[in-house]
Image 1 (tube, one colour):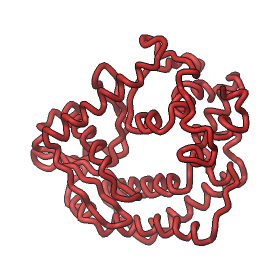
Image 2 (tube, helix red, strand yellow; image 1 turned 135 degrees about the vertical axis):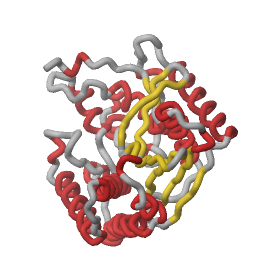
Image 3 (cartoon, helix red, strand yellow; image 1 turned 180 degrees about the horizontal axis):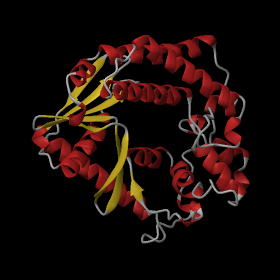
Length: 312
């Protein structure tokens, strides 16, 4: 097997990458450059630590991931002709949460940061009330209820598996000279139309429309479908609220402009564009105050504040 260090850190774009770039430049550097290669046993200690911290998650993010996994499992049960059980799904999300909680509490991530949960709240010793944990449980259970009760699920149940196009599939396409990564929660073809669904466990956010517009661009290229025949849905499971987004020319043009400006801004901070190389000094901290936003919620805060002589 080839050494994983042979992987090249090519420049690419994703919605999460843009979010990191605009939240904190130093966080962006750690996530996409400093942590690169940190999975290798012979990597330097800083790269290993940055890689571990980059794999860290938070309670809300963990809850959302568990719900997504359960929705995916439910749909695959449906695809293979079996009947999904809502009570079993509720049991699964609670069981998976407890398992991840134990992994984090027992620091199992030390030997496997990619596959074992490492919670921000544990690592940084944040106190959690019983009510906060109950709220997380309720979020997951209510989201399962919301999925099974949704018009989207009822509609999908009427489709044959031959109409399915994607389910949590990671793929890429090119925009503005860069590889753009997308992961559609679910897509299906019905007649000439393509329906794309994005399951959400958080609150309604207007910026999610841009993400759906990016999915529409991908679908147009991937499946050769006219934008007028694409139907986009943000399905907020916890609130049982579907939000339909129309891929208008204005929205698509706005999304293209958003991506292009983001890519250009990122590349401006590269010292070698062709080889995707840069230097840490070009990426300042968002704040010198650890307790301020976004630092107080950042997994890399130990590098920036506890180990400043290393991080800088």
